[in-house]
Every structure is written in C-alpha cells, then in structure tokens.
Length: 237
Image (cartoon, rainbow, N blue to C red; front, side, top):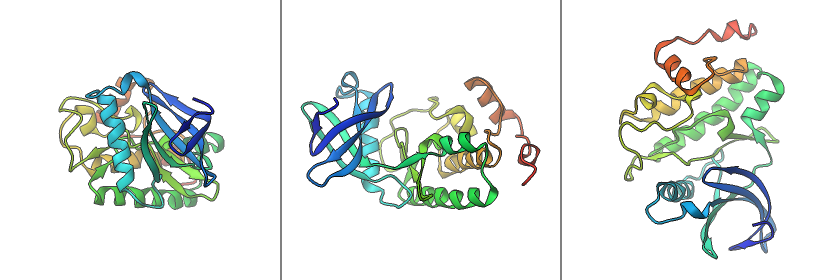
C-alpha cells in the first residue's frame, strides 16, 4: 500500500491498524495536504458484510458532521477495488497517551478538554448520532490543546436502519453504560454521557472508574458497584 495512490491521496506510511482495516498517513495531491486515510481490508469489502456496512456508515456520518471538535472527512472513494475515506490528519496524540504520559490531568485542564468533548457530543446528538464508543483512545488532542472526537465505527445513526439488534453488546467495557451491557434497545445520548463520566474520571485520577481486569468483570462492576470517589485517588480534587 505504501507509495500507492488512492484517488488524490498518495499513501506514505501506516499509522494504525485493526482487525478490519488500517489507517495510513497520506498526502493529498496537488494540494500537498496531509491526511489520514482509512482503508477496509479486502476480505471485509464484500457486499452485505457487516464490517462493510459499518465502514460505509462511519464515512457517511463523518461527511454530515462538521464541527471543530470532530475529525473532518475530506473524501470518500474506491480506487483499484480499494474502499477508503480520508480524514484530516491530527498532529498530536490521543487523550489516552496524554494521561499515560502525565499520570492524571489537573482539574482545570480536565474542565477545558471536557467542555470540548461535551461540545462535540452535543453537536453529534443534535444531528441524531450516538457515538457508543467514547474513550480516551478515541479522542485526539492536538498540539494546541484542541480535542478531536474520532472513530465513529460503531456509532448509531438514529435516522438509519440499525446495524445491530437487541442483545448485541458493542463498545469498550471500561466505559460502557449499563444499557449497552444489557444489549437493550434503549441506547440514547445518555449512553455517551455515561461514557463521558468515565472519561472525566480517568482524566482526573489516571484510571477508569473500576479497576477490573476482564471485560466481564468491568461489566459486572458497571452494573453493580459504585465507583470509588475520585478524591481517594487524587487528593487535589
């Protein structure tokens, strides 16, 4: 893939990968603009495949969301049989990286970043989109301190046909709302707000609300256990 051209984007380097595809740094020609290009793996690009439908849904959602705190979609296309969509390239790192590097964040910085996350979620919710996988690794922080919400791969578009049915659990266990864990159809903007609370907790303390080790134990804790007070982990708050 390195050196190949997808539409107007020349691929330079792989910057991330997952089970269903990869993300590359690319240059958009002739503008010379740096971009992040997401590509779906060939085996998942078959018509009717759930992974393909989610890939297409993510690109569709990003095309309709235009907000300074949500990563911007630049282009969507197919080149030589490869499906891709290009996004703005974020110079910086994830909120997860920032927390790991510094241990935890001061409350003033947490508030500043948290307001930006709230703005992004409010905008998405107003446009009928629920993220469903809000977590520090899906939040980019630029070198100037601007938050960018990314990865709408399992987002729910309230105006579209559901890609998942009742009983399916989607999300990341450490930040998952009870209704997600139960697999009920009552997913709403409140699901993202629950995850936001978990993210803010981690920003202030360095850890998610529950010290579980497995997905099952995380889920059990979310359903049955009050989290420790943040001040027990960070006496400054």
